[in-house]
Image 1 (cartoon, rainbow, N blue to C red):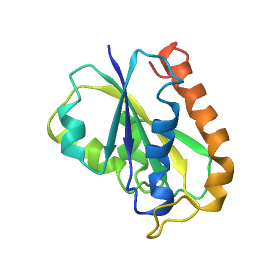
Image 2 (tube, rainbow, N blue to C red; image 1 turned 90 degrees about the vertical axis):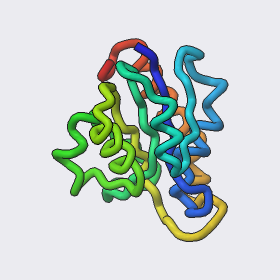
Image 3 (cartoon, helix red, strand yellow; image 1 turned 60 degrees about the vertical axis):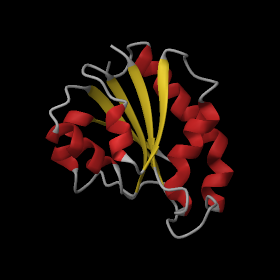
Length: 152
């Protein structure tokens, strides 16, 4: 099984870019056995990088009503049961494509709660102030997954 972190988001939509920024920040600080894919909003590019039996960690922005910067987790197989609750602008599209093309993968979604999504090349002040904490939490989650303590 190969671990792959896929960061989804739009660089021009303020906090929607948080997953991209976090993935770029932590790429040299996490286990070298995980492949980092900066997918942005190009799901076809992401699909080309996914192989059968991969374990995916999809890192994306969420708007589910928790505190900005909080990290939510959901197994890929459970997303459809909670899609009205676990909302993200991007992940369902990638998950739906995985299902459509019958790509057999396991994995989960790590969602980072946004504060504001609007046209901007910068993060909101709220997420800027929490950026290091968010990065450390994502690293912790990834390490637990790779070490088999969570989902794998």
